[in-house]
Length: 199
Image (cartoon, rainbow, N blue to C red; front, side, top):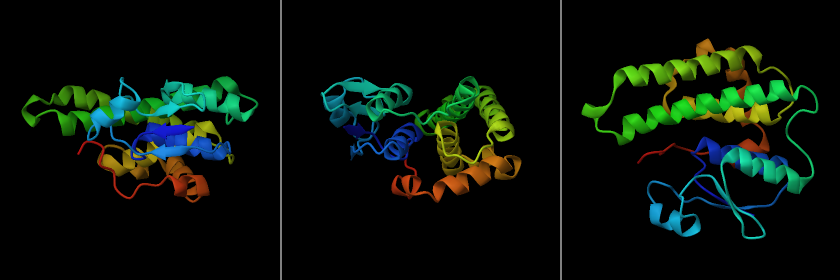
């Protein structure tokens, strides 16, 4: 399998960590959708990260769909055996926080300052904080399963790019989870020194 995308993307990192935890070998090609658009388009004309090229040569997109495929290949799941709906809720909250963080970064870094719409930024920031607030209250658990993986990846991303919009002191459970997760081998092997999402 070949995973295409930059590790400073939380979606790419989520997949890379999960593949490692599923013991699935893969090649990582760090190609940027922004800086290397044409190179990415050769692999996947839709230019969507993450992209996974399966061993059969099939190109998959979207981290959730890629992980569904990966778990079928591995023959096991990173979702908890019990409480599936609750686990899906936690993953959904983490993905929502992640999506809102990315929207803010794109608005700030790609749109000219005079065209940025502060009321929209405020609303998106509020949605992000609401998702993190619910995650902080509900995440729990000692196991590092998909809800915890996704929450930890999303939190680290937000703290790397817009920490002033989600103050760590307001989300103590996520701080603890992130610290614990980042010390594991799979997280260390997919770490990024500096986020350059839109440069």
